[in-house]
Image (tube, rainbow, N blue to C red; front, side, top):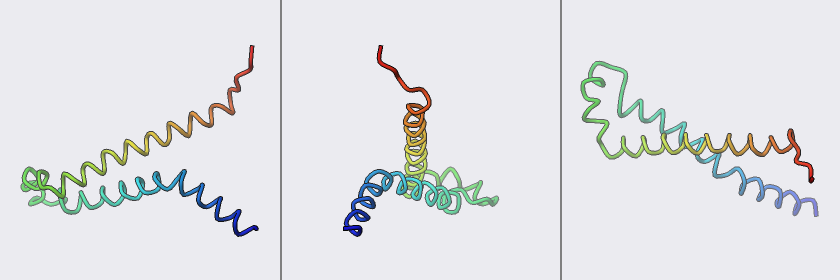
Amino acid sequence: MIRKKVMVGMNIFVALFGTYFAWISLHYVAAHLYTTYCVPGTIMGFILAPFTATMPHCQGLRWIVYYGGSSINSMWIMLGMWLSKFVTPIEPQ
């Protein structure tokens, strides 16, 4: 009985937060990969940046960084809205 409740709770947690955890992980990894492979911090990296930034893997990493950040931002907005309902309860008139 307890095991079933734990499994149900874990399924709810994964359903609610799994997508956001995946976006956070992808965003973190893609940001580090982009700076390593697409714009390395060397003089040659600076010179080659116009060429490497247009490569398909760099465009894909940039997409993940952009939309991952947007998803994380939306997560914080939704959390703030959810928490605000406890701070300012709406009373019926």
